Length: 295
Image (cartoon, rainbow, N blue to C red; front, top):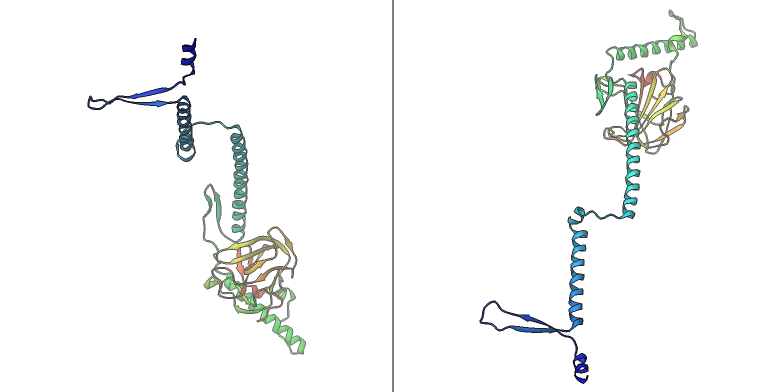
Protein backbone atom coordinates (compact mmCIF):
# COMPACT_ATOMS: atom_id res chain seq x y z
CA UNK A 1 0.00 0.00 0.00
CA UNK A 2 2.76 2.37 0.89
CA UNK A 3 4.50 1.70 -2.44
CA UNK A 4 1.33 2.42 -4.43
CA UNK A 5 0.81 5.72 -2.62
CA UNK A 6 4.43 6.61 -3.29
CA UNK A 7 4.01 6.02 -7.05
CA UNK A 8 0.74 7.95 -7.16
CA UNK A 9 2.34 10.98 -5.52
CA UNK A 10 4.83 11.38 -8.36
CA UNK A 11 3.94 14.13 -10.83
CA UNK A 12 3.23 13.22 -14.43
CA UNK A 13 5.95 14.29 -16.85
CA UNK A 14 6.25 14.14 -20.66
CA UNK A 15 9.59 13.42 -22.30
CA UNK A 16 10.41 14.39 -25.87
CA UNK A 17 13.24 12.36 -27.30
CA UNK A 18 15.32 14.02 -30.08
CA UNK A 19 17.26 11.45 -32.16
CA UNK A 20 19.74 12.69 -34.79
CA UNK A 21 19.75 11.13 -38.26
CA UNK A 22 23.37 10.14 -38.26
CA UNK A 23 25.05 8.03 -35.64
CA UNK A 24 27.61 10.72 -34.72
CA UNK A 25 25.27 12.59 -32.42
CA UNK A 26 23.65 11.51 -29.25
CA UNK A 27 19.94 11.46 -28.55
CA UNK A 28 18.60 14.23 -26.35
CA UNK A 29 15.60 14.19 -24.10
CA UNK A 30 13.44 17.20 -23.18
CA UNK A 31 10.97 16.91 -20.32
CA UNK A 32 7.73 18.92 -20.17
CA UNK A 33 5.15 19.29 -17.47
CA UNK A 34 1.51 18.83 -18.52
CA UNK A 35 0.69 22.50 -18.11
CA UNK A 36 3.58 23.38 -20.41
CA UNK A 37 2.21 21.06 -23.07
CA UNK A 38 -1.26 22.57 -22.74
CA UNK A 39 0.19 26.08 -22.92
CA UNK A 40 2.18 25.22 -26.04
CA UNK A 41 -0.88 23.77 -27.78
CA UNK A 42 -3.07 26.73 -26.82
CA UNK A 43 -0.46 29.23 -28.00
CA UNK A 44 -0.16 27.41 -31.29
CA UNK A 45 -3.94 27.54 -31.80
CA UNK A 46 -4.03 31.27 -31.00
CA UNK A 47 -1.24 31.98 -33.49
CA UNK A 48 -2.97 29.97 -36.19
CA UNK A 49 -6.30 31.74 -35.61
CA UNK A 50 -4.61 35.15 -35.62
CA UNK A 51 -2.80 34.35 -38.86
CA UNK A 52 -6.05 33.26 -40.51
CA UNK A 53 -7.82 36.47 -39.42
CA UNK A 54 -4.98 38.60 -40.77
CA UNK A 55 -5.18 36.82 -44.12
CA UNK A 56 -8.94 37.29 -44.31
CA UNK A 57 -8.95 40.96 -43.33
CA UNK A 58 -5.79 42.43 -44.88
CA UNK A 59 -5.31 40.31 -48.00
CA UNK A 60 -7.44 39.48 -51.07
CA UNK A 61 -7.93 36.01 -49.69
CA UNK A 62 -10.88 37.29 -47.65
CA UNK A 63 -12.80 38.02 -50.84
CA UNK A 64 -12.51 34.38 -51.85
CA UNK A 65 -13.95 33.03 -48.60
CA UNK A 66 -17.73 33.37 -48.39
CA UNK A 67 -18.55 34.47 -44.85
CA UNK A 68 -22.21 35.21 -44.25
CA UNK A 69 -23.05 38.06 -41.94
CA UNK A 70 -26.78 38.83 -41.70
CA UNK A 71 -26.10 42.34 -40.39
CA UNK A 72 -23.75 43.25 -43.22
CA UNK A 73 -25.99 41.65 -45.82
CA UNK A 74 -28.97 43.67 -44.60
CA UNK A 75 -26.96 46.89 -44.47
CA UNK A 76 -25.45 46.60 -47.92
CA UNK A 77 -28.72 45.43 -49.42
CA UNK A 78 -30.42 48.63 -48.24
CA UNK A 79 -27.54 50.72 -49.58
CA UNK A 80 -27.74 49.00 -52.96
CA UNK A 81 -31.49 49.60 -53.15
CA UNK A 82 -31.01 53.29 -52.26
CA UNK A 83 -28.21 53.62 -54.82
CA UNK A 84 -30.36 52.00 -57.49
CA UNK A 85 -33.19 54.43 -56.75
CA UNK A 86 -30.81 57.39 -56.97
CA UNK A 87 -29.45 56.16 -60.29
CA UNK A 88 -32.99 55.78 -61.65
CA UNK A 89 -33.88 59.29 -60.51
CA UNK A 90 -30.72 60.71 -62.08
CA UNK A 91 -31.47 59.00 -65.38
CA UNK A 92 -34.98 60.45 -65.40
CA UNK A 93 -33.58 63.93 -64.70
CA UNK A 94 -31.02 63.53 -67.48
CA UNK A 95 -33.75 62.57 -69.94
CA UNK A 96 -35.81 65.61 -68.89
CA UNK A 97 -32.77 67.88 -69.27
CA UNK A 98 -32.07 66.45 -72.71
CA UNK A 99 -35.63 67.12 -73.85
CA UNK A 100 -35.50 70.62 -72.36
CA UNK A 101 -32.16 71.23 -74.09
CA UNK A 102 -33.63 70.22 -77.44
CA UNK A 103 -36.64 72.52 -76.99
CA UNK A 104 -34.47 75.44 -75.89
CA UNK A 105 -31.98 75.06 -78.73
CA UNK A 106 -34.80 74.78 -81.23
CA UNK A 107 -36.22 78.01 -79.82
CA UNK A 108 -32.80 79.58 -80.40
CA UNK A 109 -32.92 78.59 -84.06
CA UNK A 110 -30.76 75.48 -84.00
CA UNK A 111 -31.75 72.32 -85.84
CA UNK A 112 -31.17 69.57 -83.30
CA UNK A 113 -32.62 66.15 -82.53
CA UNK A 114 -32.41 63.95 -79.45
CA UNK A 115 -30.36 60.76 -79.79
CA UNK A 116 -29.40 57.92 -77.47
CA UNK A 117 -25.98 59.50 -76.88
CA UNK A 118 -27.26 63.05 -76.36
CA UNK A 119 -28.25 65.88 -78.72
CA UNK A 120 -27.15 65.93 -82.36
CA UNK A 121 -27.00 69.06 -84.51
CA UNK A 122 -28.47 68.59 -87.97
CA UNK A 123 -28.08 72.18 -89.16
CA UNK A 124 -26.15 75.38 -88.59
CA UNK A 125 -26.80 77.04 -85.23
CA UNK A 126 -27.28 80.76 -84.62
CA UNK A 127 -27.25 81.42 -88.34
CA UNK A 128 -28.78 84.72 -89.24
CA UNK A 129 -31.06 84.91 -92.21
CA UNK A 130 -29.44 86.76 -95.14
CA UNK A 131 -31.95 89.58 -95.07
CA UNK A 132 -32.16 89.92 -91.28
CA UNK A 133 -29.63 92.76 -91.17
CA UNK A 134 -31.33 94.51 -94.08
CA UNK A 135 -34.68 94.28 -92.33
CA UNK A 136 -33.26 95.79 -89.14
CA UNK A 137 -31.54 98.62 -91.06
CA UNK A 138 -34.73 99.29 -92.95
CA UNK A 139 -36.77 99.36 -89.76
CA UNK A 140 -34.29 101.81 -88.22
CA UNK A 141 -34.52 104.13 -91.24
CA UNK A 142 -38.31 104.04 -91.16
CA UNK A 143 -38.24 104.91 -87.46
CA UNK A 144 -35.85 107.83 -88.03
CA UNK A 145 -38.00 109.17 -90.87
CA UNK A 146 -41.14 108.86 -88.78
CA UNK A 147 -39.54 110.70 -85.85
CA UNK A 148 -38.45 113.48 -88.25
CA UNK A 149 -42.00 113.78 -89.56
CA UNK A 150 -43.34 114.04 -86.00
CA UNK A 151 -40.80 116.75 -85.14
CA UNK A 152 -41.72 118.80 -88.22
CA UNK A 153 -45.39 118.44 -87.40
CA UNK A 154 -44.81 119.70 -83.85
CA UNK A 155 -42.87 122.74 -85.20
CA UNK A 156 -45.57 123.47 -87.74
CA UNK A 157 -43.32 122.91 -90.77
CA UNK A 158 -44.92 121.50 -93.92
CA UNK A 159 -44.61 117.86 -94.64
CA UNK A 160 -44.95 116.00 -97.90
CA UNK A 161 -45.40 112.62 -96.20
CA UNK A 162 -48.16 111.74 -93.82
CA UNK A 163 -47.05 110.12 -90.54
CA UNK A 164 -48.37 106.60 -90.01
CA UNK A 165 -48.54 105.65 -86.33
CA UNK A 166 -48.58 101.95 -87.26
CA UNK A 167 -45.11 102.22 -88.81
CA UNK A 168 -43.60 104.01 -85.78
CA UNK A 169 -45.25 101.68 -83.26
CA UNK A 170 -42.80 99.33 -81.55
CA UNK A 171 -44.17 95.80 -81.77
CA UNK A 172 -42.29 94.52 -78.73
CA UNK A 173 -41.44 97.39 -76.35
CA UNK A 174 -38.80 96.62 -73.77
CA UNK A 175 -36.84 98.66 -71.25
CA UNK A 176 -33.10 98.82 -70.65
CA UNK A 177 -32.16 95.86 -68.47
CA UNK A 178 -29.71 97.84 -66.33
CA UNK A 179 -28.14 101.24 -65.73
CA UNK A 180 -25.01 101.82 -67.79
CA UNK A 181 -23.58 102.80 -71.14
CA UNK A 182 -23.76 100.92 -74.41
CA UNK A 183 -20.19 100.09 -75.41
CA UNK A 184 -20.94 97.87 -78.40
CA UNK A 185 -23.92 97.56 -80.67
CA UNK A 186 -25.61 94.90 -82.75
CA UNK A 187 -23.03 93.45 -85.17
CA UNK A 188 -24.34 90.19 -86.66
CA UNK A 189 -21.55 90.08 -89.26
CA UNK A 190 -19.09 89.71 -86.35
CA UNK A 191 -21.39 87.25 -84.56
CA UNK A 192 -22.25 89.87 -81.95
CA UNK A 193 -26.03 89.52 -81.68
CA UNK A 194 -26.85 92.06 -78.98
CA UNK A 195 -25.86 95.14 -77.02
CA UNK A 196 -23.08 95.39 -74.44
CA UNK A 197 -24.20 97.57 -71.53
CA UNK A 198 -21.24 98.43 -69.29
CA UNK A 199 -21.82 99.20 -65.62
CA UNK A 200 -20.61 98.64 -62.07
CA UNK A 201 -20.39 95.14 -60.68
CA UNK A 202 -23.38 94.44 -58.47
CA UNK A 203 -25.76 96.77 -60.32
CA UNK A 204 -29.26 95.33 -60.53
CA UNK A 205 -30.28 93.72 -63.82
CA UNK A 206 -34.02 93.92 -64.54
CA UNK A 207 -36.33 91.94 -66.80
CA UNK A 208 -36.89 93.98 -69.94
CA UNK A 209 -40.47 92.66 -70.39
CA UNK A 210 -42.97 90.24 -68.90
CA UNK A 211 -42.24 86.57 -69.48
CA UNK A 212 -41.18 83.17 -68.19
CA UNK A 213 -37.60 82.34 -67.26
CA UNK A 214 -36.67 79.34 -69.42
CA UNK A 215 -33.01 79.21 -68.34
CA UNK A 216 -31.12 80.53 -65.34
CA UNK A 217 -27.70 79.03 -64.78
CA UNK A 218 -24.02 78.87 -65.68
CA UNK A 219 -22.47 78.50 -69.13
CA UNK A 220 -18.74 78.51 -69.84
CA UNK A 221 -18.86 81.27 -72.48
CA UNK A 222 -21.59 83.54 -71.11
CA UNK A 223 -21.13 82.94 -67.36
CA UNK A 224 -24.29 83.36 -65.28
CA UNK A 225 -26.96 83.53 -67.96
CA UNK A 226 -30.71 84.16 -67.99
CA UNK A 227 -33.11 83.55 -70.89
CA UNK A 228 -36.70 84.84 -70.72
CA UNK A 229 -39.45 83.74 -73.10
CA UNK A 230 -42.06 86.36 -74.05
CA UNK A 231 -45.24 86.30 -76.08
CA UNK A 232 -45.03 86.68 -79.83
CA UNK A 233 -42.04 84.36 -80.24
CA UNK A 234 -39.56 86.67 -78.49
CA UNK A 235 -36.63 85.65 -76.29
CA UNK A 236 -34.35 87.96 -74.31
CA UNK A 237 -30.85 87.04 -73.10
CA UNK A 238 -28.89 88.47 -70.16
CA UNK A 239 -25.25 87.27 -70.07
CA UNK A 240 -22.13 87.65 -67.84
CA UNK A 241 -24.03 88.28 -64.59
CA UNK A 242 -22.29 88.19 -61.23
CA UNK A 243 -25.17 86.29 -59.59
CA UNK A 244 -28.74 85.29 -60.41
CA UNK A 245 -31.85 86.41 -58.52
CA UNK A 246 -34.35 84.16 -60.30
CA UNK A 247 -34.77 80.53 -61.27
CA UNK A 248 -36.09 78.65 -64.29
CA UNK A 249 -39.88 78.35 -64.80
CA UNK A 250 -40.44 81.57 -62.84
CA UNK A 251 -42.72 84.30 -64.25
CA UNK A 252 -41.21 87.78 -64.06
CA UNK A 253 -42.61 91.24 -64.69
CA UNK A 254 -41.00 94.09 -66.61
CA UNK A 255 -38.51 95.86 -64.35
CA UNK A 256 -38.30 93.00 -61.83
CA UNK A 257 -34.74 92.33 -60.57
CA UNK A 258 -33.42 89.10 -62.03
CA UNK A 259 -29.62 89.31 -61.59
CA UNK A 260 -26.64 91.42 -60.56
CA UNK A 261 -24.29 92.81 -63.20
CA UNK A 262 -20.94 91.05 -63.37
CA UNK A 263 -17.99 89.89 -65.45
CA UNK A 264 -18.50 86.12 -65.59
CA UNK A 265 -17.84 83.81 -68.53
CA UNK A 266 -14.88 83.26 -70.84
CA UNK A 267 -16.08 85.75 -73.48
CA UNK A 268 -16.54 88.66 -71.08
CA UNK A 269 -13.95 91.46 -71.33
CA UNK A 270 -15.21 93.59 -68.46
CA UNK A 271 -18.21 94.30 -66.19
CA UNK A 272 -21.25 94.50 -68.44
CA UNK A 273 -24.52 92.87 -69.47
CA UNK A 274 -24.71 91.37 -72.94
CA UNK A 275 -28.36 91.84 -73.91
CA UNK A 276 -29.94 90.06 -76.87
CA UNK A 277 -33.43 89.85 -78.39
CA UNK A 278 -34.45 86.96 -80.64
CA UNK A 279 -37.61 86.76 -82.71
CA UNK A 280 -38.75 83.33 -83.94
CA UNK A 281 -35.24 81.92 -83.59
CA UNK A 282 -33.50 84.86 -85.32
CA UNK A 283 -31.49 87.59 -83.50
CA UNK A 284 -32.77 91.12 -84.02
CA UNK A 285 -31.33 94.51 -83.14
CA UNK A 286 -32.38 95.38 -79.56
CA UNK A 287 -32.01 99.10 -80.39
CA UNK A 288 -35.23 98.86 -82.42
CA UNK A 289 -37.21 97.62 -79.41
CA UNK A 290 -35.81 99.43 -76.36
CA UNK A 291 -37.95 102.34 -75.18
CA UNK A 292 -35.33 104.15 -73.07
CA UNK A 293 -32.25 103.63 -75.25
CA UNK A 294 -29.29 105.76 -74.06
CA UNK A 295 -27.36 106.09 -77.32
